[in-house]
Image 1: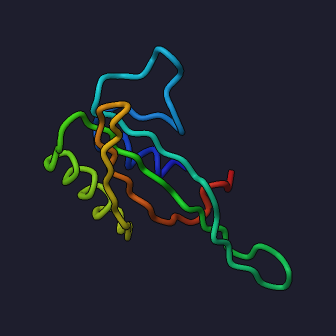
Image 2: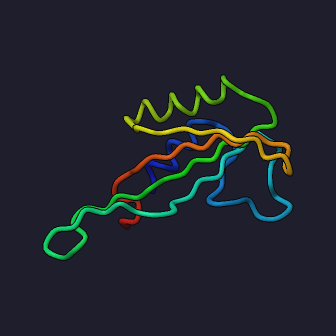
Length: 109
């Protein structure tokens, strides 16, 4: 988990796991991240190698290509292969750029 938090700190915008507490959400841009699942490798009927799915949700109030590049540069510098999608959330008036990737051993220690 330390590597993931270190990557998020490099981006230099506020971030929180899953969501910010009610009333404490910063103004955009900000990031929410979560670990919604795993893709573990099994051997001899046990989890041999832990792999977590990671979602990084970048929220902005306008299309911010420079910020997306900063996020992607951080991933690239840590050799993270990611997929990216984008949506406009009308009710929040925010863009969400979603990055999905896998990282090993995030639940270890």
